Image (cartoon, rainbow, N blue to C red; front, top):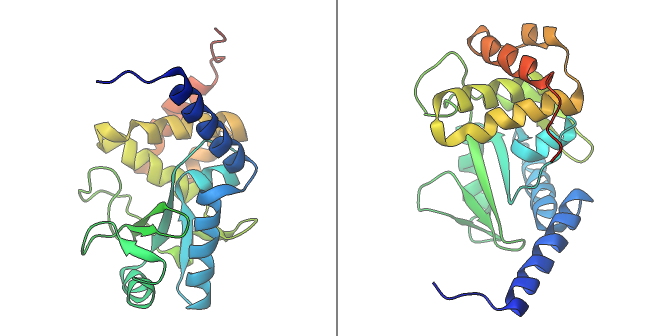
Length: 208
């Protein structure tokens, strides 16, 4: 592997810091892509809810992300693709669910109502209907807090490569100061894991 020059390291670091600054101030490609897809779906009368890291931020925990997650029904995704593929959006993989916003160079992952988080296998928690799970955020509709926590817990519990979802819930519990009895608002399937993470959140974060 070729070693990077000092100038290249500086250039990449500066680019990363600029991207992070833009994201955390509500600007930049990711936020522009989220606003654009929300506008397209709203104008078409397609129910949706922004999920993932952007929804986490709406509920109190901000972390950097490079993509946009959108909860949608299958027929809504089909309608969107029929209208917009080739007009600022391209399939990431032919016939797949994800698209790329070619204007902002941002990947958009669609979470389909009725599919299952994490390992994709049937379980008590499925991706909900956006008409039931969405609430109004500052800029667009986002997944409500109980449904977002359910989705992330079910994902992290069943897919070893999705442990970030459990970390997200832990950090969200701290950032939003979620009460212990919040577990009563989520599906019994994920309550024990929420309780485990809530107890873990009581330990002070290490300061090295």
